[in-house]
Image (cartoon, rainbow, N blue to C red):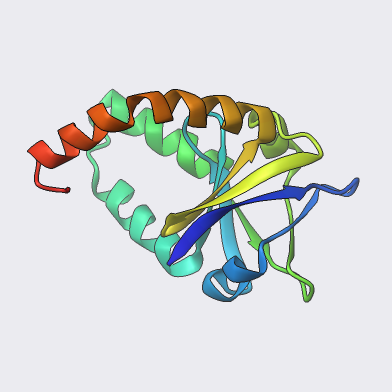
Length: 144
């Protein structure tokens, strides 16, 4: 399970050193793609396959499905984690998420998210203010 929050740097060659706790879980081959809320998502191969299968089952007759599939697949890149735990973040993805040298890497169960440090801080503050309301909604559907 991928959990936790870590502040890391992207080097001048667009490489990110993944947190040591994530490296073993992710393995050597990963998929990096545009996420939601202005971050990037990283999936290990088997998790990406699950998402790919679900997206491929969605109806291409619906415009929303086509649009989301295009977004996910066109921005996805297969990447390898090098021997010291670094992954190359393509420039176009780095630009999409406005990633600077300092980033926040978070574990969200089956995926890793990479955030601009300032954007993550602001997002987290906003969600913290809603935590009780969100918990109540999750309780209504039986999650909490």
